Amino acid sequence: MDEATLLKKLRWRCRRGMRELDQLFERYLDSQWATAPTEEREVFLRLLDCEDDKLWRWFMGYEVCPDAELIDLIARIRALPA
Image (cartoon, rainbow, N blue to C red; front, top):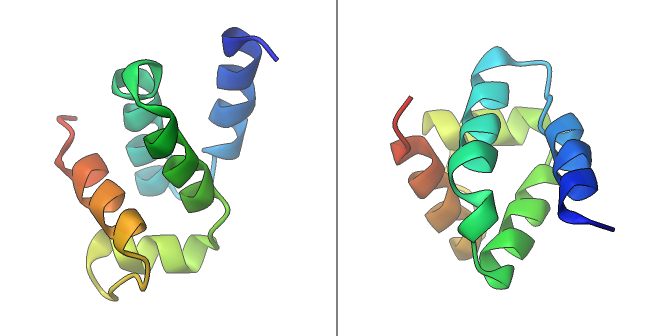
């Protein structure tokens, strides 16, 4: 699959039905995905596999994610400029 097709599929997967989560994920796609190393891309894909309610609680800081790699990526995504 070429990069453009992959990006379209990821953009669709980033649509979570919560505007805040949508914006966070799209911000990452737009600013980080293209230069992200393979390992980070794999962590991002794992993050997209998580349930929306868990993502919301992790991103808003209401709950601590049990996965250290996800915690790191969540923190970096939250720190991206709007």
